[in-house]
Length: 307
Ligand SMILES: Cc1cc2nc3c(=O)[nH]c(=O)nc-3n(C[C@H](O)[C@H](O)[C@H](O)COP(=O)(O)O)c2cc1C
Image 1: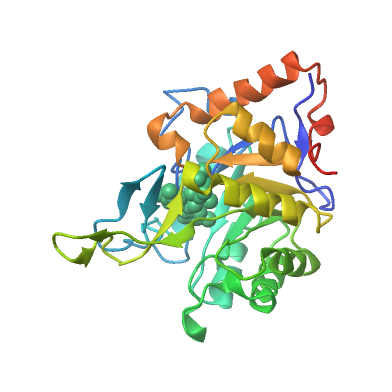
Image 2: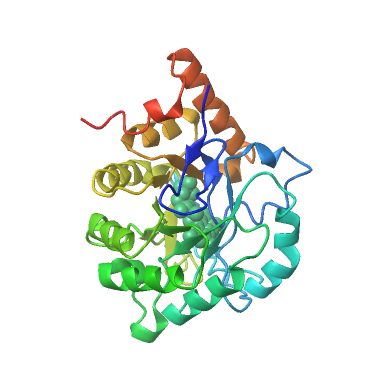
């Protein structure tokens, strides 16, 4: 059975995964926390925590709460900063078989470019995933990924600063995600991943205050799966670069649905909080589906639900 998938076919070195299952950024740390628990080398790829130029403490507590069928989070990109990542984490990743993709986040376009430059040529870093769901501090705080032109400018700036394969991670908090996907593809993205969290909030009726310290948060988990699946379907129908599906994937059958919608690979986020083995169980679930349905090559399933 062939589960291998090429995520960056247009890139000179490409990004070949042994299978389509990756961890989603912010939900699996740096991967270094887990090798004693499971064989992480079996995963298709690991996407590490969102990384900024300077280290960040993140947002005020509370930052995470469970909702009906999901999680609201406002972690605020707590991370060690790109220089510490290159010094302390990349040398460990360099000894791994599983590719590690570094998710990056900036407050300005220049910050995105500076982070990408720091990662260029670093052994152990296989690709960059650009999180464009961050507030654009120099232009009023709207997410970079809301406007196709701004999203394209971030993509082009990162592309010019790195020779690594580039995945752009799209936000669902925009009027037309297809337009943003087309704009970042045109600007040089090798693949797109979607979706990031949907903006949401919760209010404590006793205190009459928002529950999350930062007032709002991002919703993830099973609650967002139908929205994510629809957006993957729409984007995969519009772009010619690979699409990576993410949002509420909890079991192997969810992953198969995203692949049938047109995703070449999937990312597993919130499901890992309930079950840290979720990415492994989901990989096994995809394999079992293929066995049971006589599918020898994953490529046969990609986009199978498209008419
Ligand atoms: C606690 C938490 C932290 C996250 N941190 C990041 C991050 O740093 N960068 C990013 O691009 N996405 C981040 N995400 C979004 C996830 O990677 C994923 O896109 C989203 O949660 C939807 O997938 P899921 O429903 O499988 O969790 C975070 C999500 C959660 C729940």
